[in-house]
Image (cartoon, rainbow over all chains, first blue to last red; front, side, top):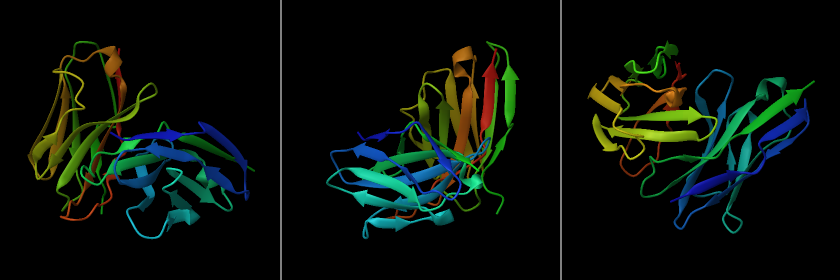
Length: 114
Length: 116
Protein backbone atom coordinates (compact mmCIF):
# COMPACT_ATOMS: atom_id res chain seq x y z
CA UNK A 1 0.00 0.00 0.00
CA UNK A 2 1.06 3.57 -0.58
CA UNK A 3 0.81 6.57 1.65
CA UNK A 4 1.34 10.29 1.23
CA UNK A 5 2.51 12.89 3.73
CA UNK A 6 2.02 16.54 3.04
CA UNK A 7 4.40 18.24 5.40
CA UNK A 8 2.60 21.57 5.70
CA UNK A 9 -1.06 21.87 6.56
CA UNK A 10 -1.19 25.62 5.93
CA UNK A 11 1.02 27.90 3.86
CA UNK A 12 0.43 31.64 3.94
CA UNK A 13 2.18 33.53 1.16
CA UNK A 14 2.21 37.04 -0.25
CA UNK A 15 1.11 37.74 -3.78
CA UNK A 16 3.90 37.45 -6.37
CA UNK A 17 6.09 35.49 -3.93
CA UNK A 18 7.18 31.91 -4.69
CA UNK A 19 5.59 28.95 -2.99
CA UNK A 20 6.64 25.35 -2.44
CA UNK A 21 4.33 22.63 -1.15
CA UNK A 22 6.06 19.54 0.13
CA UNK A 23 4.92 16.00 -0.49
CA UNK A 24 6.58 12.74 0.50
CA UNK A 25 5.30 9.29 -0.32
CA UNK A 26 6.03 5.77 0.73
CA UNK A 27 5.63 2.75 -1.49
CA UNK A 28 7.32 -0.57 -2.08
CA UNK A 29 6.62 -0.42 -5.81
CA UNK A 30 6.88 2.12 -8.60
CA UNK A 31 4.29 4.84 -8.43
CA UNK A 32 2.41 7.50 -10.31
CA UNK A 33 2.21 10.89 -8.61
CA UNK A 34 -0.35 13.66 -8.87
CA UNK A 35 -1.13 17.12 -7.57
CA UNK A 36 -4.74 18.26 -7.43
CA UNK A 37 -6.17 21.66 -6.47
CA UNK A 38 -9.52 22.22 -4.79
CA UNK A 39 -11.00 25.72 -4.86
CA UNK A 40 -13.65 26.53 -2.24
CA UNK A 41 -16.88 24.58 -2.73
CA UNK A 42 -15.58 22.88 -5.85
CA UNK A 43 -14.30 19.48 -6.88
CA UNK A 44 -10.67 18.56 -7.40
CA UNK A 45 -8.86 19.62 -10.54
CA UNK A 46 -5.64 18.03 -11.77
CA UNK A 47 -2.64 20.37 -11.75
CA UNK A 48 -0.05 17.91 -13.00
CA UNK A 49 1.02 14.29 -12.92
CA UNK A 50 4.18 12.24 -13.09
CA UNK A 51 3.95 8.90 -14.84
CA UNK A 52 7.47 8.38 -16.19
CA UNK A 53 10.25 10.17 -18.04
CA UNK A 54 11.47 13.62 -17.11
CA UNK A 55 11.42 14.18 -13.39
CA UNK A 56 10.41 17.83 -13.80
CA UNK A 57 6.75 18.05 -14.62
CA UNK A 58 5.01 21.20 -15.73
CA UNK A 59 1.32 21.68 -15.10
CA UNK A 60 -1.42 24.20 -15.49
CA UNK A 61 -1.48 27.72 -14.03
CA UNK A 62 2.34 27.97 -13.89
CA UNK A 63 2.83 25.12 -11.42
CA UNK A 64 5.59 22.55 -11.68
CA UNK A 65 6.75 19.62 -9.58
CA UNK A 66 9.89 17.55 -9.36
CA UNK A 67 9.94 13.82 -8.74
CA UNK A 68 12.84 12.71 -6.58
CA UNK A 69 12.96 8.96 -6.30
CA UNK A 70 15.83 8.79 -3.82
CA UNK A 71 14.04 11.15 -1.44
CA UNK A 72 10.58 9.79 -2.30
CA UNK A 73 9.34 13.32 -2.77
CA UNK A 74 7.17 15.20 -5.25
CA UNK A 75 7.23 18.85 -4.22
CA UNK A 76 5.05 21.40 -5.98
CA UNK A 77 6.32 24.89 -6.83
CA UNK A 78 5.17 28.11 -8.37
CA UNK A 79 7.59 31.03 -8.82
CA UNK A 80 5.00 33.78 -8.39
CA UNK A 81 1.55 33.24 -6.90
CA UNK A 82 -1.67 35.16 -7.45
CA UNK A 83 -4.61 35.78 -5.17
CA UNK A 84 -6.52 33.28 -7.30
CA UNK A 85 -4.14 30.50 -6.22
CA UNK A 86 -5.75 30.50 -2.78
CA UNK A 87 -7.02 26.93 -2.49
CA UNK A 88 -6.33 23.54 -0.99
CA UNK A 89 -3.74 21.39 -2.69
CA UNK A 90 -3.62 17.61 -2.54
CA UNK A 91 -0.76 15.29 -3.39
CA UNK A 92 -1.79 11.78 -4.44
CA UNK A 93 -0.09 8.52 -5.36
CA UNK A 94 -1.11 5.33 -7.09
CA UNK A 95 0.85 2.26 -8.03
CA UNK A 96 1.36 0.92 -11.52
CA UNK A 97 -0.70 -2.20 -10.93
CA UNK A 98 -3.76 -0.51 -9.42
CA UNK A 99 -3.45 2.87 -11.05
CA UNK A 100 -7.08 3.71 -10.33
CA UNK A 101 -6.52 3.74 -6.58
CA UNK A 102 -5.38 7.20 -5.57
CA UNK A 103 -4.14 7.66 -2.02
CA UNK A 104 -4.40 11.31 -1.08
CA UNK A 105 -2.44 13.37 1.40
CA UNK A 106 -4.23 15.43 4.02
CA UNK A 107 -3.98 18.57 1.94
CA UNK A 108 -2.19 21.91 2.19
CA UNK A 109 -4.18 25.10 2.41
CA UNK A 110 -2.52 27.96 0.56
CA UNK A 111 -3.67 31.46 1.41
CA UNK A 112 -2.34 34.21 -0.81
CA UNK A 113 -2.40 37.72 0.64
CA UNK A 114 -1.97 41.03 -1.16
CA UNK B 1 -18.19 19.34 -22.12
CA UNK B 2 -20.36 19.70 -19.02
CA UNK B 3 -17.97 17.80 -16.80
CA UNK B 4 -19.05 15.36 -14.10
CA UNK B 5 -22.50 16.28 -12.82
CA UNK B 6 -23.62 15.50 -9.28
CA UNK B 7 -26.94 16.01 -7.61
CA UNK B 8 -28.02 17.24 -5.24
CA UNK B 9 -25.26 19.70 -4.34
CA UNK B 10 -26.46 19.87 -0.75
CA UNK B 11 -28.53 17.40 1.23
CA UNK B 12 -29.72 17.73 4.80
CA UNK B 13 -31.53 14.77 6.27
CA UNK B 14 -32.37 13.23 9.59
CA UNK B 15 -30.76 10.17 11.07
CA UNK B 16 -32.39 7.00 9.85
CA UNK B 17 -33.51 8.38 6.52
CA UNK B 18 -32.43 7.02 3.16
CA UNK B 19 -30.13 9.22 1.11
CA UNK B 20 -29.43 8.84 -2.60
CA UNK B 21 -26.63 10.71 -4.31
CA UNK B 22 -26.48 10.83 -8.09
CA UNK B 23 -23.70 11.16 -10.62
CA UNK B 24 -23.50 11.58 -14.37
CA UNK B 25 -19.96 10.95 -15.64
CA UNK B 26 -18.36 12.67 -18.58
CA UNK B 27 -19.66 11.23 -21.83
CA UNK B 28 -17.33 8.58 -23.20
CA UNK B 29 -15.66 7.84 -19.90
CA UNK B 30 -15.74 4.20 -18.90
CA UNK B 31 -14.54 4.40 -15.28
CA UNK B 32 -16.37 5.93 -12.34
CA UNK B 33 -15.33 6.55 -8.77
CA UNK B 34 -17.10 7.58 -5.56
CA UNK B 35 -15.04 9.35 -2.90
CA UNK B 36 -15.84 10.70 0.55
CA UNK B 37 -14.09 13.71 2.07
CA UNK B 38 -14.12 14.43 5.80
CA UNK B 39 -11.93 16.52 8.05
CA UNK B 40 -10.92 13.49 10.07
CA UNK B 41 -10.16 11.02 7.30
CA UNK B 42 -9.47 13.21 4.28
CA UNK B 43 -10.31 11.86 0.82
CA UNK B 44 -11.17 8.18 0.65
CA UNK B 45 -12.08 6.04 -2.32
CA UNK B 46 -15.36 4.26 -1.66
CA UNK B 47 -15.93 2.32 -4.86
CA UNK B 48 -14.57 2.02 -8.40
CA UNK B 49 -16.55 0.94 -11.47
CA UNK B 50 -15.07 0.01 -14.82
CA UNK B 51 -17.46 -0.46 -17.76
CA UNK B 52 -20.37 -0.28 -15.27
CA UNK B 53 -19.02 -3.19 -13.21
CA UNK B 54 -17.87 -2.66 -9.61
CA UNK B 55 -14.19 -3.55 -9.50
CA UNK B 56 -13.17 -2.44 -6.03
CA UNK B 57 -15.66 -1.71 -3.26
CA UNK B 58 -13.24 -2.26 -0.39
CA UNK B 59 -13.67 1.35 0.69
CA UNK B 60 -17.41 1.12 1.26
CA UNK B 61 -17.68 1.61 5.01
CA UNK B 62 -20.46 -0.83 5.80
CA UNK B 63 -23.59 -2.48 4.53
CA UNK B 64 -25.57 0.71 4.91
CA UNK B 65 -23.74 1.98 1.83
CA UNK B 66 -24.49 0.71 -1.66
CA UNK B 67 -23.60 1.93 -5.14
CA UNK B 68 -24.98 1.08 -8.54
CA UNK B 69 -24.13 1.93 -12.11
CA UNK B 70 -27.04 0.73 -14.28
CA UNK B 71 -25.55 2.27 -17.43
CA UNK B 72 -22.56 4.22 -18.65
CA UNK B 73 -24.12 7.59 -17.96
CA UNK B 74 -25.50 7.25 -14.45
CA UNK B 75 -24.51 6.07 -11.00
CA UNK B 76 -26.02 6.28 -7.54
CA UNK B 77 -24.62 6.05 -4.04
CA UNK B 78 -27.21 5.16 -1.45
CA UNK B 79 -27.01 5.29 2.33
CA UNK B 80 -29.76 3.49 4.23
CA UNK B 81 -30.20 4.22 7.07
CA UNK B 82 -28.12 7.36 7.35
CA UNK B 83 -26.23 8.29 10.52
CA UNK B 84 -24.67 11.59 11.67
CA UNK B 85 -21.17 10.17 11.08
CA UNK B 86 -21.99 9.90 7.38
CA UNK B 87 -21.91 13.68 7.15
CA UNK B 88 -19.25 14.50 4.55
CA UNK B 89 -18.71 15.74 1.03
CA UNK B 90 -19.17 12.97 -1.49
CA UNK B 91 -17.38 13.28 -4.82
CA UNK B 92 -17.93 11.41 -8.02
CA UNK B 93 -15.10 11.20 -10.56
CA UNK B 94 -14.77 9.64 -13.99
CA UNK B 95 -12.03 8.86 -16.48
CA UNK B 96 -11.46 7.25 -19.84
CA UNK B 97 -9.61 4.07 -19.00
CA UNK B 98 -7.40 2.98 -21.87
CA UNK B 99 -5.29 -0.16 -21.80
CA UNK B 100 -1.70 0.61 -21.00
CA UNK B 101 -2.29 4.18 -19.91
CA UNK B 102 -3.15 6.09 -16.79
CA UNK B 103 -5.67 8.77 -17.44
CA UNK B 104 -6.79 11.67 -15.36
CA UNK B 105 -9.72 11.35 -13.00
CA UNK B 106 -12.13 14.27 -13.43
CA UNK B 107 -14.04 15.20 -10.31
CA UNK B 108 -17.54 16.53 -9.94
CA UNK B 109 -18.40 19.45 -7.64
CA UNK B 110 -19.47 17.15 -4.81
CA UNK B 111 -22.55 16.66 -2.67
CA UNK B 112 -22.37 18.04 0.83
CA UNK B 113 -24.36 15.69 3.06
CA UNK B 114 -25.45 16.64 6.55
CA UNK B 115 -27.19 14.03 8.69
CA UNK B 116 -28.82 15.47 11.77
